[in-house]
Image 1: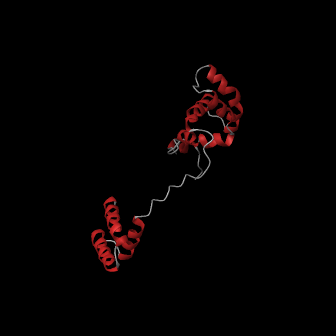
Image 2: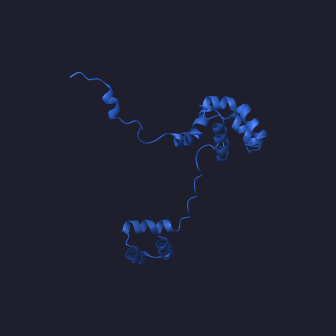
Image 3: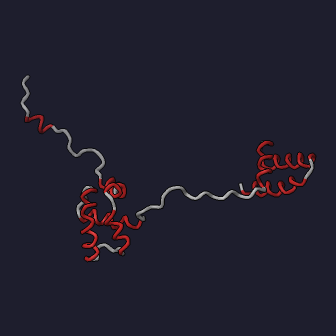
Length: 156
């Protein structure tokens, strides 16, 4: 693709200054080199000398809670044995300073403050992957057996 762009740019420089008959010959040359349709080749020649359009900045808000808070949140959740997010959010105020004092949670003041003010719904979104990883998958271990069938009297 970059070779086609380079060829198009070289021909576009000559195409811009050429007369009508020369433009037809240059267009035919570009079609033969690239395999493009004449209409597309003409458009490519016109656009080859335009300056590249600036990239758009990503739309949306910047994240309030950075990704490096995730391990600390998972640790707090695991210490309390995986409570619901409302209980976890309510207990973060005393849990985070206690874990920092014990040196179990290695975060500075700013991330600790962010952890303590995180809402229950944000905690739910952040821990969705951890909860999914803990969910049991597969078939149930209980299977029908003949032992129970022999103990139930059936009137025939």
